[in-house]
Image (tube, rainbow, N blue to C red; front, side, top):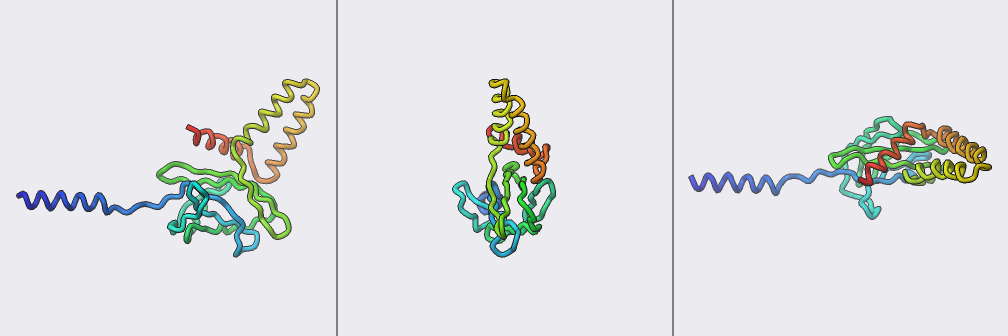
Length: 177
């Protein structure tokens, strides 16, 4: 009886320590795809921005609200749709650790794509700053309203809809808590 108990306990201990470590993507960045013209690459990174070479397989990302199955190889996946003009890209990935999202503005000039990360804080600060300017200086209320309309038009014409705008802010606020 003692040998069987010892055998069962050792099997349980081995199975506990031998469990496979699941690979998850908690941070990522987008970069210009060097192998495809007008395409982006999503790179899985650690907190320091180094590429995670152990990320391989298929992961689900939502890009501007559309689900994409992206195949990662050595931490890099290529986003297949071509980018024809400058655009906002809102990328979300959900895993066991939570939902991770990033908002980028991809500026296209010549044959090159330059992605710029946009913090949710700026999305919140610009409209609040315009409202405060209009409130503090009554003469500038019309100028602040015009700048706000231009801000909304620029966002909308480059693919950043109002639901995506607010979702990016809410995801940033959730990340703080």
